[in-house]
Every structure is written in structure tokens, then in C-alpha cells.
Length: 548
Ligand code: NA7
Image (cartoon, rainbow, N blue to C red; front, side):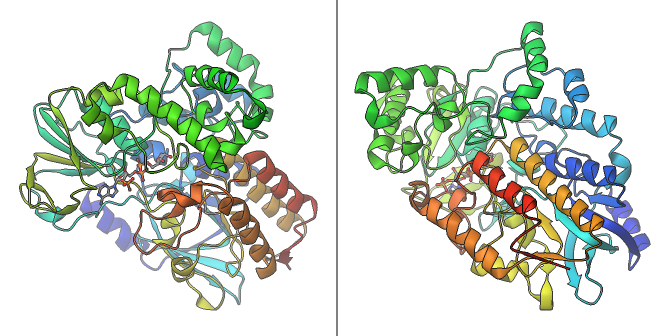
């Protein structure tokens, strides 16, 4: 969309008020499904999407090497067996274009686009206590009046794009990975800098290392990694997946992290060291996140268990990096395995054996600013670059919502509230913000400890059931009581604080954003347990929620 069409759109919409039953933010995995479910109920609903097409995460994150870390056959919708049987995944861990194509296929087949406003961003919303309705403002100047306001804005959708002073002075292009252009980016022969070695940075680095002229990787914290075992699916794999659709649909809802695999029930202390070693080797060989999410639950809480698993992974990494100096730079020692997101990788470590790839240790000498020539570090050195790639992550969980101006009862601001203390009721609603439903929001398992599609669909189903209940009982307002919210936050914190995860800095704890209140953003009590607790609320006709 050109600047002039945006301006024309804004002029056309200025001040216009349109009435809906429900407004959904986002047309990614959750938003598309939410639109589908509410429309099915006969509600008048619109989804507001900032991008020019559907896909959410899989629309925005089109950087080189972007790939899903969940197996294809569980990273999908479960509402239609017919559609699942029609779609054919090509490999175990598909690349971004395939997942984006899948979401477009669903949008086509469910005719979703007619109710999605693309290229439009929600900038603010206010709950009107006189009418019990939300007035939602878009960047086009339009006001959408709706009884229900559902955020499907995503857990990892507010990118940290302005990371360093002086970025605007850089002579070359700067790309944040979550704002990668659709047009091809020329990296061949160029001097490329990459900041960040999270799950995203790893995918970028391993993919472009052989293409660029020279690459400087600005690394602050090394990562534990698991080698991804990707392989193409054959017809018999696909047939088995289709055959097993109903079983898998049930299974992912009950496991710890919404994957098909789960803790095997082996207790670390009941096993001999040899048996533990054998188990670790076996699960490691699967080449998936199962090594993180199925070994022993104690790994998340017991330092001794975590130490043994961490050392196993370090050993696996050392076998691949013979050079001790390089090994010291690439192998983590300052935190435990699995206490933040573990990335899958393919030849990531080997990228650093290439003569054109260099690590700049920005823990020892942090990045000070960006200059016209490149990146300046605290030792005074200017690292000259043609292209700078920021794989610097997101204001996770809360950022998508706090970047809008959302006002609840008495004009209270969600941004101000969450800047002080990030709270919610099961990640689904927030006290003080009636009829606002949230998916992928803080204090639910999403993203950090869940296969996203499992959790997003479960949350959308909960929201849909709740709205259906309200409509069938002629209710106007629902809001969790303060006591209910306090209880959930207390429960969440109790489980979180018993784990080692809260002792490690990462986006999981909000510590990647200056001033963000520290709390584990995702519920770590398990996807199956979380679902059960959500179902109990529904079964009790929303005990703990004020309705009228
Ligand atoms: P992450 O996991 O938040 O990683 C961001 C990376 O950027 C991480 O290595 C950071 O180092 C690094 N970073 C951020 N700011 C700086 C500065 N100022 N200097 C140096 N390095 C910096 O984001 P991703 O996009 O990789 O992954 C997010 C999720 O997407 C992932 O967990 C999956 O669920 C999918 P740090 O570790 O803070 O030292």
C-alpha cells in the first residue's frame, strides 16, 4: 500500500463509527480461528490486521531461514478434519513460506478475508461504562463499536526494532527479522552484521553464512542448542498423519507443552547414571524439542538434574567445536539448559568454523551505538558493515497490547497497569477491562511452554464458549473479580518461582526490555493442567467472574 492510499483511506474513515458484535485484533493463527468461530455463531465480527495478508507471525517473520520448531503435523488447526486431510506438509519442520501458504489455504477455504481489514492497525480502545461496549480506534481514524473485544495480537509480535542509538544514521539498510521485506534482500558478497543469537538469530546465521561476504555476529549470550532432525515427508508419512488426526487432536491437549510428546514418567533419581545417559542419547537423537520438554520435569526445578542435562548438551556441542577458544565463546555456562527457549539448529555451530564468520563478544564490550559506517562497541572499535540485521527479539506477551492505548473501567490504562505489574486472569481476561478477551497474553502457557497452535486454539475455544454463554443468557458484561485474578497470579507465581526459569534472564522473564516488571510471562503448570482449569471455569458457569 502506498503512502497516498493510506492517506486516502484515513481521510475516508475519519470519525466513521461502525458497529460490530465483536472486533478481533489480528489475522494470524489465533485471529483467523477466532473470526471463524464467532462468525459461525452468527455474530457480526471483523478482524483488524496490520499486515497486508493473513499469517501473523508467519506473515511478518520472513527472514532467511525462518522455520517452525514444532513438527508440522501438530502445528495446525484441529477444527476441520476435512481441511487437515486436504493439506499436505512437505517436511517435518517446514520453512516459513509453507506455513504462510497453509494459513492462506485456510483463509481461502473458510472465506475469511471478506471480514478482515488489512493494512489497518488498532491504536486504542476505550470501554464505555454507560453502554458496556468498546470503542476501538484504528490508524485509519475509524471507530469500531463492539460488545466484545478480542485480542489475537500475538505473544511475539511487538519487535524491538529501535535497539541502538544512531540507527537512523547507518548508511546501509537495517532489517529487524520480524519486519523482513517481501522483496529479495541482496546479501551476497556484503559485510553483514547480525545482532542476536536467540532462536531467530540462529536460523538467520546458519542460513546466510555461506552467502555473505563477511559476517560479524554480535553475541552477548551463547545458546544451548538441539540439532534439528528435519526430513521430507513421504506419502506414507502423510497418510499416517491423516489417519491419526483424531488421536493427535486429543493428545496435544493433554501433554505438558501441547506437543505430541510428553514426560515419560521417568524420575531422575530412580534411574542409574547409565540409564539416564541412555535416555538422554535416545531423546537427543529425535532432533526435536522433545529433549527439552520430555526428559524429566525435575530439570526445570532441581539444579542437580539441570546441571547433568546442561553438561550433556555442552558435551554434544564440544564434540562439534574442536577449537577451545571458539568453544568458550559458543557454549553457555552461565545459566541452565532449558531455562529459556531452546532453539533447534542446523549447522549453526559449523557456521563459525567458516573463515568469513566472526564473533564479536558484546558481553565483554557492549554495543554503544550505530554509526554511518557500522556498529560501535564500548572498546571504541567501529565494525564496518553494509547491512545490519537485528535479531533482537520482542517485547513479548504484553508488548502487543501495551503499544496500544487500551482503557478499561474509569479510564484506567492497560499500558500503565502492566508497566507496573503484569497481571491477568488465566491470560484470558484482565480485571478492570470487561469484555476484553486475550489470547497469547501473559500468564497462560502460550509460546514459552506451549506449541502455539495448541494453546491458541484452546484459548479461542474458551473465549468462544464464553461469548456464546453470554449471548444465550442475555448478559451484557463479564469481568474477572479482583480476587479471582489475585488467586490466579498467586498460583502462577508459586509454580513459576519454584523453577529455575525465573533465575535466568530472557524474554520469558521480561528482562530483555528495560524497566519491564519481572515475572515469568508464561504459565508453567502445563498445558493439560491449564486446560483443565479453564474448563472448570466454564463448567462452573464462570465462577469468579462478575456477569450481568
Ligand atoms: P530472543 O530470544 O529474545 O533473542 C534476542 C537476541 O538478541 C538475544 O541473543 C539477545 O541477547 C540479543 N540482544 C538483544 N538486545 C541486544 C543488545 N542490546 N546487544 C546485544 N545483543 C542483544 O528473540 P528471538 O527473535 O531470537 O526469539 C524470540 C522467540 O521467537 C523465540 O524464543 C521463539 O519462541 C520464537 P541476550 O540473550 O539478551 O544476551
